[in-house]
Length: 200
Image (cartoon, rainbow, N blue to C red; front, side, top):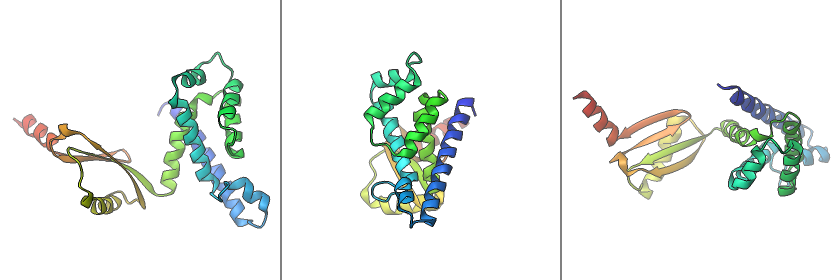
């Protein structure tokens, strides 16, 4: 693991643990309205999910515009200028997220925000026992396969919920490829042909 990935993982894990602790503390002492407001979103959504949504929103802002991307990655602009611009774009961020962004600014790690957002989302999915599954098929899946496919994938992955991403690749000729949690299962005809011809 590279140094940058270690830093990103450390920030994401630390943020998640701190926010989770804050949310748990407010649930235990739920009679204090100020703690509830500080640790939950407008609709009573726990902060771990709210922070995840805000990081996802910030990440999409980073990648949505080439000019913004160049601005945030440009070292000639100060970290404070970048933070001020982000606060102008997203004035309604939670206190937790704003505090975290200020820490990143002070440590000159503002450019790591997109990667931190991705890692935080991974940690949150793990916490909720949600598995992201990529399913690549050669032809369009029939609707009748959906329920049995999801049931099989839940058993295979041990997940409570599945976030399903289907893509089509006619080069597979038939069959499918399933990818989840760094696991890849290739049951395509293309693979069978490749193995057959490599044995000749």
